[in-house]
Image (cartoon, rainbow, N blue to C red; front, top):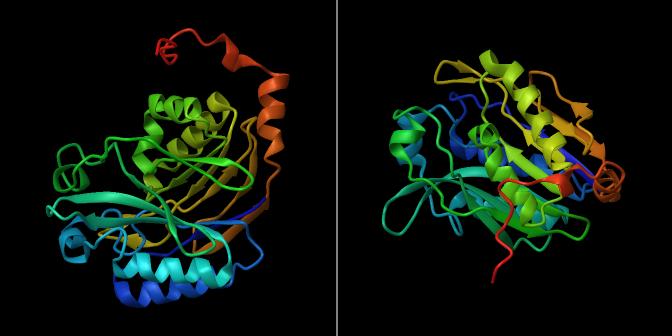
Length: 265
């Protein structure tokens, strides 16, 4: 399975519409990939809370969803389109990730559960998602999480129990916590014995320098590929069978005691 992470430079001098068109063209160029991943809130910027309301859109038929669906269809790839500021029919805002099939069909949507900001920014302006989300691709089962979710391992245990083999994490992670980013991505891979595809943004928006350094990590916690700080694609060929091979060769998951699903009907 060939995975490509597109680490996007989010510059507020570039309009959202122009960036949307530019990213759609980048997706269309990834015709050899099986799965393409974009970062968190790349349309507006994860820290640009002042623009959230103005740039909010429906998750299923907003301008970003329509552009990304068409790009996925043209490239014939599975596309995790990062996340958008979703406005639901009741007017609430969510940080919502979108996954499109090679036919351009919205296959899954995940509303970010853990909102960052400590009662400011995203945490003050957006509602929290309530459900974990997985989706079955031809080669693997993906579990969806977003940025700050990385700090909450219990969510990844639930994704593991729901059958996830590859964890996809779009992010807008700040450069000042780059060490945490690299540590947490590898930790989530090791503890779940899964691939982790963690795609971040580059550039600076709302005065916050972004970490970049998107990562592809294997089920043993080894870094398969890592980007630098600027806008760039990151591609790696993955072997989905390594997930079960790792879990069989080092069967740590069978020794879990706490937090297991209740076996009772």
